[in-house]
Length: 189
Image 1 (cartoon, rainbow, N blue to C red):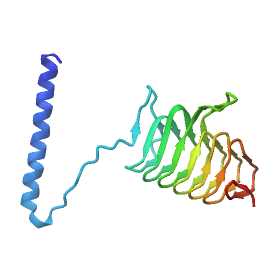
Image 2 (image 1 turned 30 degrees about the vertical axis):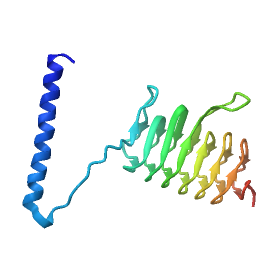
Image 3 (image 1 turned 90 degrees about the horizontal axis):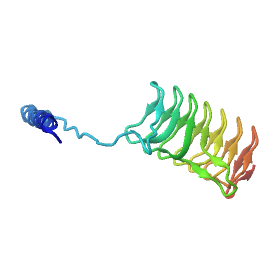
Image 4 (image 1 turned 180 degrees about the vertical axis):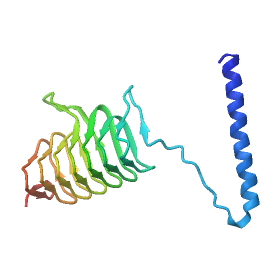
């Protein structure tokens, strides 16, 4: 670090120290009426391998969610608390108006055994229930994935189809439009 860099670092450190000191004085002056705020260093949007998330300006991403790497999220979608969307070795695309609920994991696969590339594609107006796992698969528009469901590599959930809560959908399964599948392994209900 050169002379200018050291000077900028020193000034920045001084400003941060002054801010912390002012906060402590303000808290003392407020007495028992103070509200102590803790800053979280968690970043909801993170780059990985030179790829960064592309999130529409009106998307809600909860403070404890993590959107990492090659991830695209369409307008009016919501990513709730504790979710992880990790587009590291492939891409994730989430459409408009989609709701991915608390503690859901969305990941990708580079390829499967036969060499097929497996990004994760989630369409428009999809609801994904709490704690679901979606890995290297496609969920088409207006589909529903229940709480705690697991969708493995190559799964396709067609438009207006539903996966019941707690289901395990095996690799390369196609759930036809309008059908409800459930169980472990999931089958037509």
